[in-house]
Image 1: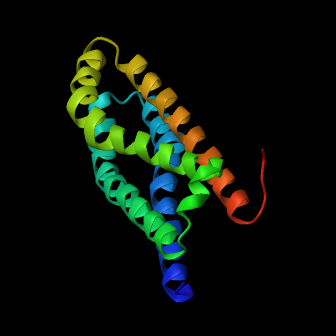
Image 2 (image 1 turned 180 degrees about the vertical axis):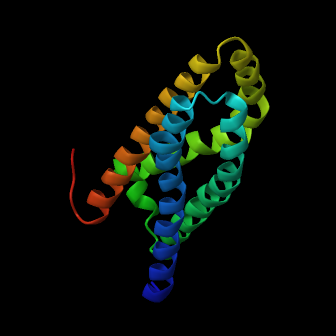
Length: 155
């Protein structure tokens, strides 16, 4: 295995995840609460989050490509059989990718706009709850990946 290439892919992977999940954390714990406190509507949230959505689309795919490159370079495909945190990473990536590329732009955007016309405060509250669930999944996956990659195991 080429350890220099592996180290570069790992660095790229970590940077992608930091930008992606760090952005989710910011939207969840800072942006949404601030907008709700100020009485802003879904349109304000949508305008701000669209900029992050572009970054998230790029960084989620960069995390996937770099993760696959690390598996390929280390010939670690067999680890997928018994490493729960690798599957957690793939599942988390798949959920976010589905949200970013399919559900949000095709299904949820229009429904949330319609819901916000009737219940603006409730719509932002719903969005914040959904973001908390996604953030919790991402943080659990990150913790598992970090601990697992350094020899630890939870179960």
